Amino acid sequence: MDVYGLIGNPVEHSLSPPMHEAGYDHLGIDAKYVTFEPPRGAAVEAVESAATLGVAGLNVTIPFKQAVLDAVDPDPLAAQIGAVNTIDFATDPPTGYNTDASGVVRALEHHGVTCEGVAVVVGAGGAGRAAAFALATEGMTVHVANRTAEKATTLAAAVDETAGSAAGHPLSAVPSLLDDADLLVNATSVGMDEDRSPVSADALHADLAVLDAVYSPIETRLLRDAAAAGATTIDGAWMLLYQGVEAFERWTGRDAPVAEMNAALRSRL
Image 1 (cartoon, one colour):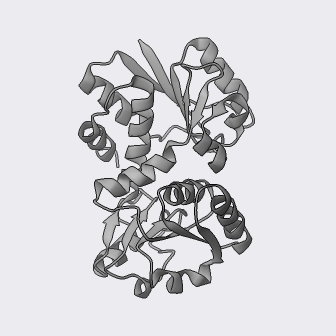
Image 2 (spheres, helix red, strand yellow):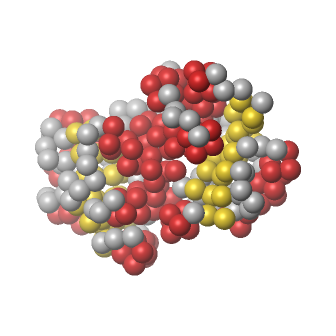
């Protein structure tokens, strides 16, 4: 039996185990997906221990996505983003990937949204970095807006230097940026704990696609406002699903059963 898993702190409410195990069950793969909660500050030791135990692959979540870089050989995109959320132990040293990036792109593709034109990414944290690099690599012009404008400018400069065209802005610039935008990505936690949106409703329009990385609740204020404006809406569970699908396929070498994994995920939301 192959063992895959997730390291994070905390991880008790993770939706990854049922999602991945639905995939194993559907394809008849003899595998198990488990969670590990090492102490904060013990990321490298956790990865080394997993390798010793024969774990075939790991997902990585908060707060370890940056720290595990010291224990893996990151692929070029993960190195650019500066974070790893998937580790493959088939190589020595293990290879680190950032499937959050492909999760953004594949979620958009699933909804018929092409990565063309102008994207506005709100948030310059981990999800924002993954989205900005992914979209710029696909050829979009990316505008990053953040509460701390300096962080947006720093991220945009890194994207512009290595992946494609990008610029940084304060949050106050978002309404004007959206006038000519094709895509809006909320990569902040705004909307998770309260019925609030990071973007004013009157800035949204029907020519937008809107991806909200928040998946709890599944329908956020931002997505309701976007739907009312006639925009294409994509909830955060699609991003969560497709980052997992990408990891599943890298580990197993099989096409993931997306419908079954999606059903297992949404049954827990």
